[in-house]
Length: 51
Image (cartoon, rainbow, N blue to C red):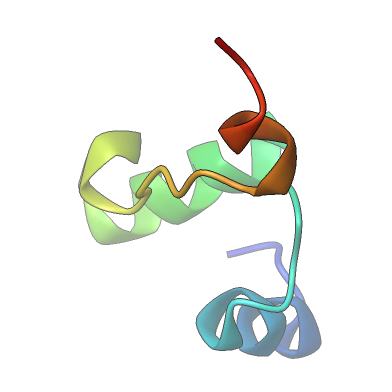
């Protein structure tokens, strides 16, 4: 798939703060899904202060 096992493990554990678009595209191609099937928005501390 072109993604290291270590990176897959970090993604699975939720210990990453961002994902490159090409990585997301490769995962979606391998799983035959759309990015919205994999991602969930969670507000962080900076988002809570916004109006």
